[in-house]
Length: 393
Ligand SMILES: *Cc1c(COP(=O)(O)O)cnc(C)c1O
Image (cartoon, rainbow, N blue to C red):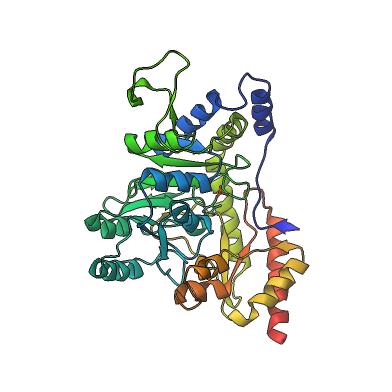
């Protein structure tokens, strides 16, 4: 089976983990800080807080922004459930902003309309979480401009887009996603299907020292050893204080060592993904489907290659035929608001029509750094056959 995504692990990656295994620290050692510094420097952002998953990063990002019961958090319905769950962990209410029909990214128009209505009804969100679906940047500059007058804080769920960039309309310069140009906090995931991996892992990036310090506390039980943060004089060298209710979301040094090694290859991985995207573009011409486009808001990291069939009624047959042909296609994503858990919270099919229409037509084709031209030809051949057969039915 050719999977839809997979990691690329080299001998250097393996050696980096083995070296750490033989070192003094498996966790809470120097590798985590080294990885954080390398990431921060890559993204041109002052602070990086590495954790054990992007889900954890989203959770501590919400906590650091004081998301709590009575607050509202808005995100995109076309995302992994973690983008919304983080708000529920904090006791807040979740709502969604519908997406652009072509890209599945949060719609600026829908956001503007929803904000206007919420301002009238006094139901504005505290935090907005745009999701850079497939690695394509949302229209962050416009989103930030819309949120600014209301003081809405922004967390970018950039789980798909480490290595990508956004274009600033002002000067046409590219800034790395993660620079937090248009947000308070940006989150990356290092799950094996993502662009670089630490097996499990994630990071929260920020320009704000206070937010960074708060997230550092929250990832490790809310415990501080810094005398400046303590409420009474230290009892001695052993002394620490728990100053808030934190969690154990720490990344291990084994993960960080792998991450550091992977980060060196990030630009090469993205370049390979871009080559594969160009190959698909020439292999998949003239089929009854829409190919994904590079977004005008930036340079995608191309985590996913999401095609949209013209005829939604053929999606199931085409998907099944591809799986039978050994192509590990997938669907990203089932709209979050239609999940049973979210339906219990009051959401229904029909609430976000563009997201539902997008969902009904999409299939994610295999895309990863080590995908070969031959494998892509196999995918194209299988897709051609699958569509032909589906059209006969
Ligand atoms: C993968 C993913 C997450 C969760 O990442 P983990 O590291 O697996 O917790 C969150 N949001 C999006 C959009 C994702 O794709």
